[in-house]
Length: 327
Ligand code: NDP
Image (cartoon, rainbow, N blue to C red):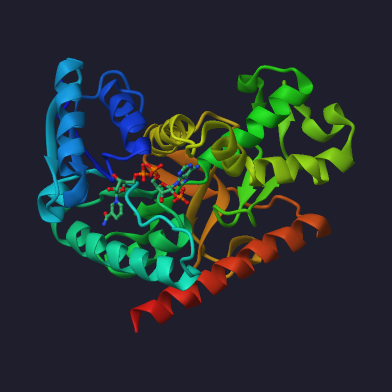
């Protein structure tokens, strides 16, 4: 039998956390034969709710779940973890300045980075979900210098999956037959969902859709603003789809992407596609043996270039704002 993998979920008493922990305990993140020990962290006001989640995990009697740590102590939460899914963050409240939200999150991510740096397992893989996800991940990287930078990522898989979903609906083709969309850039409304290399049942999506106006317009804005549309409909932000795509992100990273398929991940830019190095930026990647590689050599047209640069620009501004909160 395999040794259990320790998976940290921060903000575990929140709504994404509530959708995510049962998926992890059922083997959706790491595979149906991989035992797991869940480490759940939340803040003291959420401690009771967190304990309630722990009770439900016990009650669900998941065969793969070999233990649950539910704590408000960041050191206890981070100790020995192999995978860290960072969902906890300070939400933007009405009337708050961008800088105030950034400042709160910078201090949270700085503290949690230090705990991961000291107490996580060597080679721990980190996925940041909480917004501003790319920049939170960058701060985490800065303050956890012994964790390899390739191990620190942020979630844009939900945006990727949303793009697949929109194409599938439009073409009336199974979503499993659509692949190789790309989300470039920030997990924000400046992201660029790109279908120029995407296929559906093996054929180029652009040829099948035959409507460039839609693909260059409404398709993009629908994906960019899907989060807001869910909030409007549900009066709560997306949780099951966020949790599911966090599982997709880690599963593909650990177990590999299928041959001929890439996915989108927010990763530390090495300057590929002339994206400034030193940003956490979403790229198309393939994964093998637990490591991601940016897909190289895709032709980029002028329309795409502008959108890729605009989202990079926003990330550079966020980075500057985050650093100004540090000093
Ligand atoms: P959710 O579980 O709904 O969301 C958690 C985070 O994920 C938010 O930052 C949210 O950003 C982000 N997110 C990223 N992508 C998405 C997406 N596609 N859809 C929805 N959310 C997305 O929030 P809750 O408030 O229910 O739970 C947060 C938990 O974090 C609480 O249990 C709270 O106690 C904890 N927390 C921990 C802190 C800490 O560790 N110091 C500080 C504050 C809270 P966005 O806000 O933009 O929706």
